[in-house]
Image (cartoon, rainbow, N blue to C red):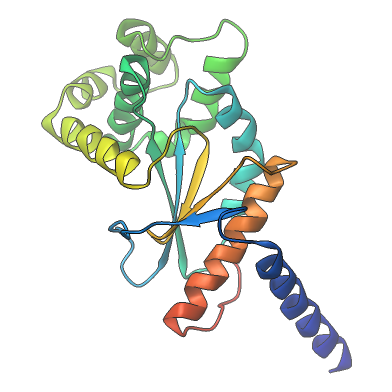
Length: 215
């Protein structure tokens, strides 16, 4: 019983410290106009990223273990950045893979292929399709999705959300349509997640819900 009490107090203290250290205008900014979320009844965490971004590639190794341990009331999703034509092509690849149910399986492998070894050109449809075929992807389905109306719609939505969140660099983390983590003052990629945890807790308290157990 005493051990459980000590652990409970430690968790409360750690959460309090994280919140105390997270300051608006320093660690995060609050949006003047909240953005719509797609995770009804849950706290939505969004990563804006690109397969072209080496910082996103480095961050992914830190991010994924954190995502896998998120509480049940938190929903994570990715939105690809749309800063240029090449970024838009990488975003198209992301949404096409998502449309055929292959993005989650190949996410890490695709990141690796782009940033290591022969350095796959994810912006080159033919080169990307050849690589995907070697990964067991139905390339005809991929090609159909790549040029589909659904993917075009998602690209437009990604551009709108990037503007709405005022994203000017990646990786970027946003919480519950209200908060964006600032990275100017961070000393490590892990600090982005510490601030994100504090913003998740802030969002949870605003909704009046208690924290569930982690997965």
